[in-house]
Amino acid sequence: MRSTGWLAATPIEFQDTLLANCDFGHVDSGTQLYMAGDDESDSLIGIAAGRCSVWLQPNNDVARLIHIFGAGGWTGDLAALMGGPRRVMIKTVGEVWRFRCLKPAIQATTTSNPATWQWFSLLFSRNFEIALSAIDALLSSNPEERIAKTL
Image 1 (cartoon, one colour):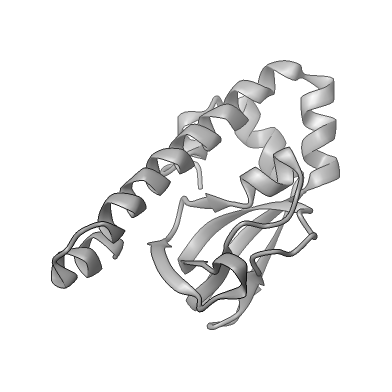
Image 2: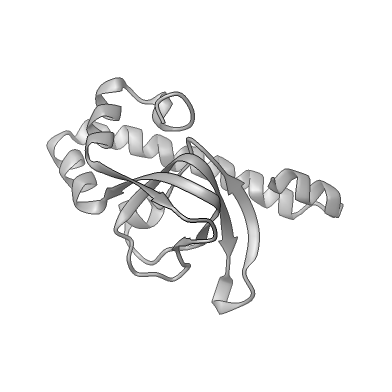
C-alpha cells in the first residue's frame, strides 16, 4: 500500500495514521464490496492484493463494467467523504486482501488535523483521472480498443 497508488504519494505520517485506523481482511472472489445506491457509505477501501471491478448501474439498469483496478487502488472516497449513496458497484475479481477505514476514523483524522484533507483531495483527483480514462475507453468505437483500455 505504501509503494504504489494514492497512499504512496502521501507523507509517511499520514500513511501511518490512516493504516493504523484501518482493519485488514480477506475477501473471497466474486464478492460485492458494495452496490450502487447503497446508503452504507461508511468506509474507504484500499486494495492490498488482488483485483476489483467497477460496475456502473444507472437507474437500476443493466450493470456495465467500466474499470478494473488492483493493488494500491482505493475506492469509496466519494460516498465516504462526501456522503450520499454509493455511485458504483465494486466486485472482487479473484481473492482480495483489503484495508478498510471506517468513516468515524476518517472524520477523527480530519478533525484533529485539517491539513490531512489535502491527501484525501489527492485521492479524489486521482480517482477523477481514472474516471476520465474510463469514459475515454467507453467512448471508443472499436470494441477491441474499448476492452483493452478498460483492462
